[in-house]
Length: 164
Image 1 (cartoon, rainbow, N blue to C red):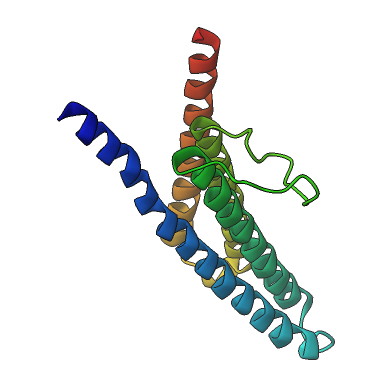
Image 2: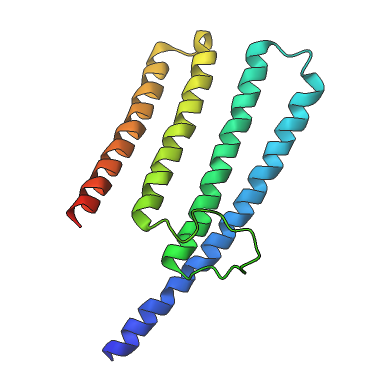
């Protein structure tokens, strides 16, 4: 009975595979939105104020960071929790594939969230005159919470690695 339950639990990891495929669909949706924004900005680039152009570019950078985060979670999560990727020898392979454990993935996700939050905060600062002080304070507090969380997770991971 014990062997049956262990095999069943081990096989259940495949329930994550559709989730990672779903992330591929999310990446496609993000790419569509990215190019929609590019096609929205380009025809008006000469008419846009510098601040509006910078805000548009920051939005594109933000989408690029989110896309990279999706790819990282999709591949690394699949490799860590479902199965190793069988990529042929002559196929281009991402440098970090097979080298990122769950702790490293967690730290990459936290760092990406901080980077994405930083861009959102920069966008808020670009529109400072239209944002009430109380809202601005919350944006900063939330961003600092993300930063502190990432630092604490990295420190815990470092302490864990030093212990082993």
